[in-house]
Image 1 (tube, rainbow, N blue to C red):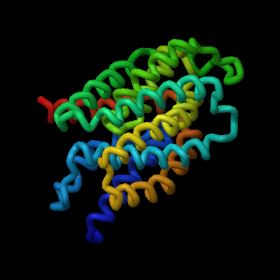
Image 2 (tube, rainbow, N blue to C red; image 1 turned 180 degrees about the vertical axis):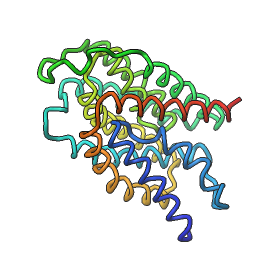
Image 3 (spheres, rainbow, N blue to C red; image 1 turned 120 degrees about the vertical axis):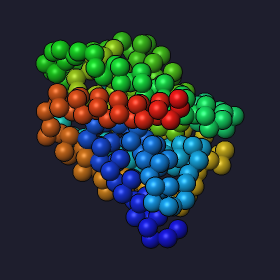
Image 4 (cartoon, one colour; image 1 turned 180 degrees about the horizontal axis):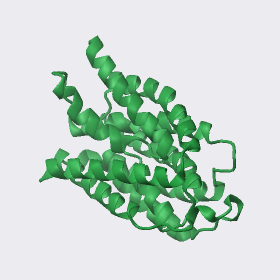
Length: 258
C-alpha cells in the first residue's frame, strides 16, 4: 500500500464514520459506494464488491463502539429495545454474512440497492410528534421489533452494512422511537449486528486486512466526533440529512445496477 492509497482509505473511513456517529448508522451506506468507486478514480487499486462488503463489516464494528461511547450518558440508550433488536439482528446478520459467499457480486449490489431504496422511501414518511415523547415513557412492540431485526440482519449481513440505515427508519416510522433515542440505540444495535456480519465475512475470507485496519483507525477517531455533533443538532435537521444521504446512495447504486 502506497501513501496515496493509505490517505484515500483513511479519508473515506473518517468521513463515513463521522456521519455514522452523527446519524446513528454504521456508515456503510456511505463507505460502500465510496470504497467501490473512489480508489479507481485516483488510479488506485479497485476493490471488488465482496472485498468492500468485508472491509465495511469490520469497520462498522469499531465505528459503532465509538458512537455508543459518546451517547452513553443522557438516557438515550433504550436497553430493552437494544436487547430485543440486537439479539434478533445478530442471528440474521450471521446468516447473511456467511451465506453471502454463495452470491454473485451483482446479487450483492442488487440487495444493497433494494435495502437503500426501501430505507429512503421510509425516511420521507411524516413523523409528527415523535420527539414530544419523554425518553423514560417510550414503549414499542417487542415482537415486531424482533421480526424486523431478523429480516434486516439477513440483508445487511450479505452486504456487510450492519443494517443501521434500515434500522433507523423502521425505529422512527414503525416503532415510533424518538429521534435521539433512535440514533443512540441504533448504534448499539448495529454494533451487535456487526459482530455476526464480521464473523461471517472473516470466516469466509472476504476481508482485506490492510485497508480494514486503516478504516478502523479512522472510525475510532471520527465516530465520537460525529456523535457529539449529532447531540447538538435539531432533530428535524438530523432526519432530513439522513433521508438525503440514504436517497443519494440509493440513486447511485440503482444507476449502476441498471
